[in-house]
Amino acid sequence: MSLSLNGPGLWYATRATGLVTLLLLTASVLLGVLTAGRFASDRWPRFLTVGLHRNVSLLIGVFLFLHIGTTVVDTYTNIPLISAFIPFSTSYKTGWLALGAVACDLMIALVVTSLVRNRLGHKTWRRIHWAAYLCWPVAVAHGLGAGTDRTTIWVFALTVLCVATVAAVATWRFVSSAKAGAR
Image (cartoon, rainbow, N blue to C red):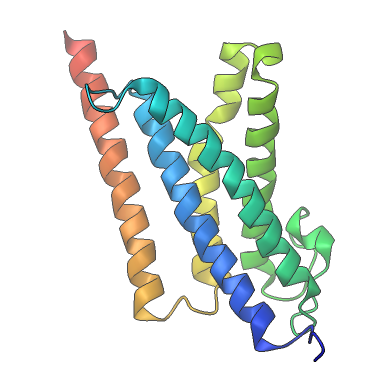
């Protein structure tokens, strides 16, 4: 039995890792917003949110690596590795893959600067970390444009659920910040 580099297995793996990355990225944004909003309760101490955010963010890197890897080795699309990092460097779905490259670059910047956060200082790190609010919608747009399942009801519903959840938590954060500022 041989491994085909353009068979359905790689296509399924690329789709699955892309969707898992979207879910993890959404979870990371939600946890980041909750962390910034200092969310805590008797049953859920703040350190759990911070730790979970950190670990989910690192897990994103694993699935992003797998997503890029399966995309690059699939000979059907013939996408070079450089296209994961350099926008507009492939002729296959150029604009949509460029968004993926931008999201990937932002994700790398977020992870690297978080790993050296103590050396950067909190203020510098926080300014850079605002890129997360750009990374997530760019990644969502990449999935909607480049994803081969984007027109299926379940992928569309999953994407809408991710967007609605982030919008709801971001609204909660904005409203709670406004109320705290008014006090």
